[in-house]
Length: 323
Image (cartoon, rainbow, N blue to C red; front, side, top):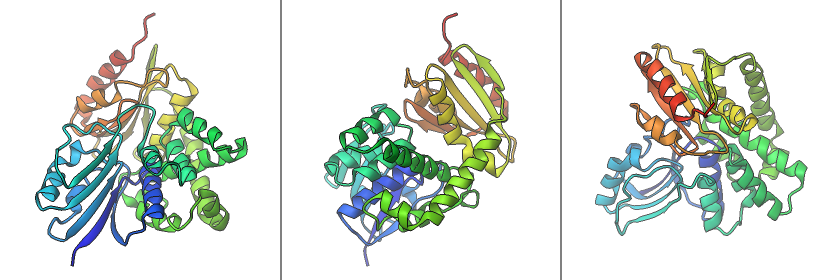
């Protein structure tokens, strides 16, 4: 029997993009997701049993071989994303909505396709992906109060925080589970009101881990760029991405790199370009093995310890300011 698959990033953007789609077009699908950095997800779909596949917030370039296999078997694929796709294949079975602009994300791509039908979920995804200015503009157009905007921003931040970790055991909630819990609700405000226990768990975890991160001082700093080092601990793995966003939001002219030590002595790297110059993060990350992302925010899944100084020098050089 043929099966439908929903393949999505385990962060706020991927989850909220899928919530919007399934509210608009309900479907009994098998879910494939994982921690935020687990992006080689499409290979988990068996072309022999796949009828159709929806892919959200997962870089096409990193999944090209698996995508080609699905298309070769005649599987219909709907693909929406905002990362660098590489070359997009021309195939009658592929519907691709790719936009790599620095001020958009997958939730906003889906929001546009659905003409804002589930705008509040789109805003949660956008706020979670640190698209604050764009989200604020849309929220104002929707007539949301400042209090409501703040609540959606906090929820998006907490959901994004929940996606970071080396494995599912680091997370407060597995992404597939929290998607299933939220998916029936037409608005995030309905979900927050009816499941305050889940919201409180996310909030308490985020605030506790954030407090630990405030004690971290720069490992290396030059005009226009800073590097921070986090230890090999679960709290650090959970907070790394949102901590990177927070550093960038506090100083929009400064680039930040947050490196989290892995058990093997290597590093996971989060790169954030300055808010006022949202470029270059993807190119810098891609110059190292296991690196990739988008112009404003990118990462390296496993930076070898012997390349630590090389990365730090390259990062500072990319974002140096004239003195």
